[in-house]
Image (cartoon, rainbow, N blue to C red):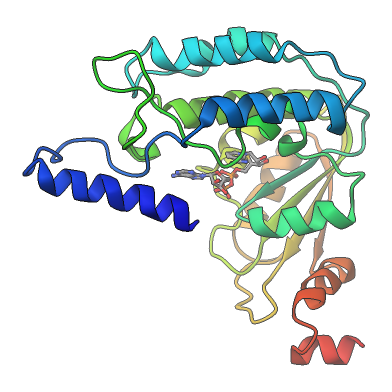
Length: 275
Ligand code: ZNA
């Protein structure tokens, strides 16, 4: 985190030194330093240690990724540009383990650590390789821009957003059996039609392949409790699922989820009553 802040600060300083040359320029962090080493390293880690039964050509994947990113302007990288890369990484998985999430990224990392049978997008090769990375191309140049990249909202076809859209679409199309969605009951619009889950994944779930959609709502220990299975946007999600012929269940603050929160804050009053 500190390192990213330092990189961000460098680009801010560079901006001042070039006297206003930044206005209208992309903002935010630049491409993650050492991206090639990180992506290739993660790929080799995945095929060697995480999922040794899989065979992928990490070099070919990198080449296809680089080509998708550096051949287009930084706001013109569409989902289709990653098609070649995704062809290099086909993936299938057993049913009943798919776990979707929205606005619960931190929590999901802890949850999957204690419930390793669940499979999130970050457990696919693509999700694993690109998680938490940033990338974009330099203007008028075919290299990566390491000093700044546009925000997602500034582009019609943002290179990072487009990759996640395509990965999310593939992941949802694969989903089968009983699937789980973890949502954050402490915020408004826990289910948002603008989120990746609401705008991509939900639309690509197949009611003929998916048996049950199990919604799990979790609120922070300190609250607030804004939404639940019977309040707020989660009702919209249930309505959409019903209208598309999905069967569903919904649970608020399942015990195991609370216990997980209590492991991190055992002194919290709520956790004392649990003990
Ligand atoms: N691993 C990821 O970084 C990632 C994963 C990014 C985008 C999507 N996903 C898939 S879609 C994930 O596996 C879940 O199944 C789905 C969650 O996406 P969501 O419903 O849009 O939920 P969210 O919490 O709003 O966003 C998910 C993640 O996307 C965030 O934690 C950020 O890492 C990233 N993100 C969202 N909005 C922005 C952003 N990054 C940069 N700029 C943004 N405006």
